Image (spheres, rainbow, N blue to C red):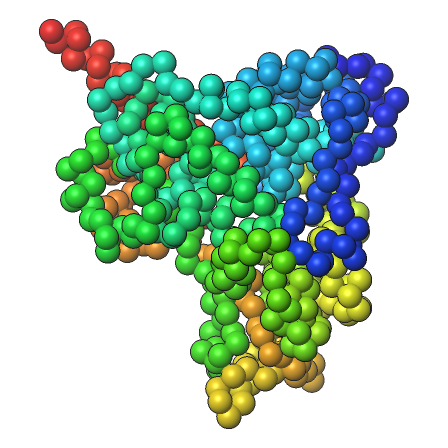
Length: 484
């Protein structure tokens, strides 16, 4: 299994980020990949640990969190193959379970690395970066298209509603199994949150478009600007398709129900990121005018989306950026009740936060602070927000009120769930563990089923949904042949 002494010979080395002063000048990708030799050295750090916690997928915290990769990825096997220079075999192993590794290899928080045996007393293997190397090599060599061609083709049609991670994963697997697949997307471009929810510097849209192009080449049909319930009804889909997969995400954003919420200059984070990404896609050099020059920006909410908003605001020239989080700051090291191999709930500095601090926003993040009102000017544009400190029960602390000036307020407080009216249109009242529903024609996968989650969860659920549809179809074929 790779080099049994590799973890002693080589220190961990991640794909380096571009210099902070350079990368804030454009929306080009943050990272610069290591060369082939360095990548093989990093793969050599994967040791024969006996019990590979990295792909064990053990749940904890009421099944809301996972230790290791939840997608059954064969991580030690493809690490070994990368070390040996057998890159095509590594690709074949990787894509047995993960159909979109170019996405996870860029945006996944890598719970696999945190549960790596080497992470118990040191630095885990660079699984995330190794994955990216494998799939980028596969695209360069033409292996991806080759792997997506079906062995046989059935006269059995499946509609996939939504082109995010779950939808693309389901479509890829279904097509490979021989089904006729059409993907419907309400936006003008495909990819769901991969396209418009994650900024270009973290996930270059050329990467997303590259995947869509290959999917079209292997026989998957795509239709954009199609909103279910408006442009296409359940009855129309049910009459044309044998099965329907709803992979529509958890698209209902958490709002801020305070006075002044409807003021100009108060936006959901996803709307802000979508607008900016569209502008980047229309530019020739992935640079944009400093549209926020002189403006004070406040981001309400943390997590990846809040961090993405901060990095985007810095690139647009914001005069100042502040971030408010209602929760306390996480500890710098693992708490006693958060042992390895669980994902470490510790404080981390995101790329956007680093960029904001480097730009002079010293007191960037305020913790345990809630917004109680949006203050507007005579033209109904936000000019400030009222905030208050909260206690551990999120109750206001008397005398802790503070007013913060703002020209733009971005709501990055996550999503609360799926658009229930769409499920109602599809006569779905129950969703089962295997992603099937009370309506035998309809399956629900990804965030639409489990709520806001990671890209890797969407990929897993898309794969399992496709395999459930295939299992049902093959069982039906067998019964019909026995009847004859």
